[in-house]
Length: 236
Image (cartoon, rainbow, N blue to C red; front, side):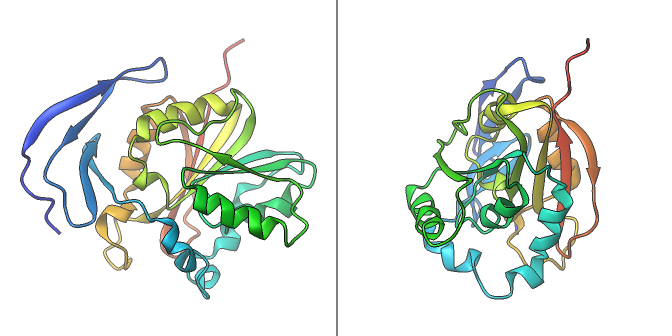
């Protein structure tokens, strides 16, 4: 699908201590995009809380092997995990029993999504789950407070990806990991709108721009990348 002709060349430049400067630019929106580009990638529309049923659809675990995502995180029992873009809590509640001595922080910018998570939490033994209302630019987590961050099919929708990732990196403890799961743009057979997919090279470009180190891309999911990044530890 064509993205349309560029119309506006003005860029919003942002620079932080975490990586090189990056910029946003604007163009005519494509069908499923907002017309805002980050490092050459057009940002997609956000799935609203009306899409909860799709997130919890029957067959999702079989189609996406969501069980392998949780297994692949290899979490310690006392890990503090942030599920950023938690949506309906599909992964939040699967991670919860894996960290019985830790916590799962379900982060989302839509109060309706967090309300759905809180409702489900009251129906089960998920005492280590907490909801966090973030913003478009901030995950709203304390500095150096989490061991792992999971983002499943959410990052491509962030309207301010650089700012959100800077706040995420700040929330990670040194050596903490980011698990980025996105539909593979390299595979034309994946039946997802183009802007809701990412290439490995684009994901690495954007994560490394905020100071994360690439660890690996595990080829274990039917349709998605399972990309692992790490916050460097300071040199002693």
